[in-house]
Every structure is written in C-alpha cells, then in structure tokens.
Length: 358
Image 1 (cartoon, rainbow, N blue to C red):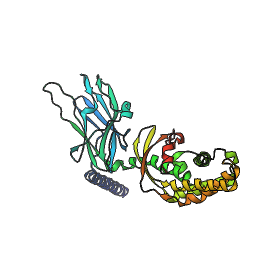
Image 2 (image 1 turned 120 degrees about the vertical axis):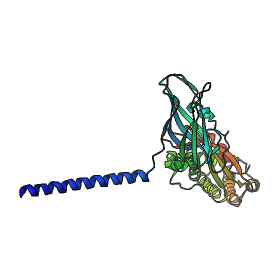
Image 3 (image 1 turned 45 degrees about the horizontal axis):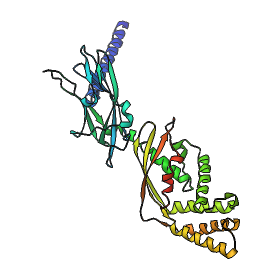
Image 4 (image 1 turned 135 degrees about the vertical axis):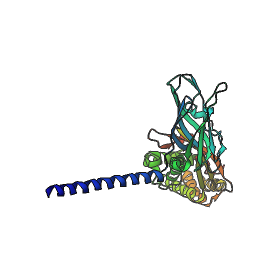
C-alpha cells in the first residue's frame, strides 16, 4: 500500500515538472517570435571591427553650418579596430550617413577638430575612435554606412548601422539651455523680475548678479544724462528712475533667443531684440533741464539741476515707444564645470545696449 502511494506521488511530481518544462518552452518560443533581435552596435567588414559607441543630437561648433528650422547635428561616436594581420587604413570619409535613403551632409566641426575621427594606419590589434558629425532632420531614421578601403580586385561589402532619431530625442532637450540662461539673466536684471530657473540654468547667485548689474546700470544712466558727479545725486530719485526704466523695458521691449552653436566650453546665442526709442525723451529732458537751470539762475553742475533732471527723465521715459524695427546680436555664454551657462557682462554690452534704439 505504501509502495503504491509513493509511486503515485512520484508520478504526480514527474507530471508537474514535465508540464512546467513544456510551459516554459512555449513561453520562450513566444518571446522570441514577438521580440526582434536588437540592432548590433558592433559589426565587421573584412579585418575592420566597427562599433557605434554613442549617438546624440548637438549643435554646430561654429557658424559655418547653416541649419534649417528642424535640423540638428547628429553626433556619432565610433571605433574601428584592426582584427587582421595586414595594416588597416581608416578615415572619416569611409563613413556616410543616409536619411530616408538619401545621403546627408557631413559637418566640419572646426572648433572640435581634435574630437573628430582621425585618419589612422592601424596595425594588428590596434584601434582608433572619434566622432562623426552630420546635418540631419530631427527625429528621423538614419543609416550609418562604413565602406573599408580595398586594394586590387579585393572587394568587401559595406556594413550599415541603424540609428533611430526618436530614441535619442532626449539628447536634444538641453540644447537651448544657453538661450534660456540668457533670457533668465535678462529677466532678473533688465526687466527687474524674478526667474525661478535662473540659478538652475546659470549656477550663479541671483542677488549678487542683480546687485552688480544695478550699480553699473545706474552709472550708465547718469552718464547718458551727463550727470558725472554722482555724489550730488539724490539716491532716492535715482532708484525711482531705475525702477521706472526697468518697468518700461519690461513693458515695451521684446526679446527672443535661440542657441546656434555649442562646444564643450561655450555657446553662441542669437538674440533678436525690439528696443525702445528714447530719442524724444532725452531731447525733452535736455530741454526741460536747461529751462529749469535758466529759470533758477543755477549752474549746470548744481545739485538742484542734477536732481531735477532725474525727475524729468522719470516722467519722459514713460512716454518712450517700442521701436518699429528689431536688431539681432550674438551673445557668447561660457559653460562652467557643472555644465551651467554663464554670461560675461563685460563682453555683452552690445546685447544690453540693443534694448535702446541707437
């Protein structure tokens, strides 16, 4: 009786194991049929072993490339290794990129020349790696083709790597950070308003930047009014005028910005500014100041004349109108060690001056 019971238990266990094994095989077969083999990032052509190490979107390193609205630079890092016994010649022109079966233009990154794939004559076991740059439409499917050099009648078929632009779309999301950083600087300084992303984009102390800017801004304002002796100026009147001007900038000027070039160290931002026209305001201030001076029998450098001119400017600048034309300027921002984009105010006077029509 015990032997029959033991035999039954063993039979049930064998059946369960067999069913599990069969079920496992069925699942495995289903998985293989549903999931395609991932594209290999390593292929061979003759004695050349080629790898695609990384693909991402970037911007040109200089202004030599003229990108259309939906175009970017595709940056592909590759390596080539000699797996044979004979020397292997390698250069970037053995590679070509196709977008929808059409060959695209390669981009010469003059400022990143040392990072491009360099020509090399590789001995057995040696390898070289570097970047290739191509002008492409964002979000397309690309095919990177490598054709090895051959000698005599020997022929080796090219190899192709598929690159899906949609899968690397996230690499483009920070390319406009330099432009955003410039607009953040503009918000907290020239427009006198807060920008909650300022420190995240620039890594700078907001309070210190604003304080330094206002000192220089007030100095420039006094110079524009020929008020050279700042010790005679009423600080409250000057602060009031500063706030009025910043409000006028915010209300009556416009600015857009786009990042056009980028390297590991700096970026170029193209800013288009619609300024205010202060010509009439300055003429009226000059006229009223002269009338006030004459009516009081005062000298030009008298303290009362200087402070009166601040009052006149405070009223007249409010009447300034938005200019009828815009101006485009290029602004350079430096990348710090943490990847933040910072503005050098000493090199950016053209940008800030452009908010007033010349």
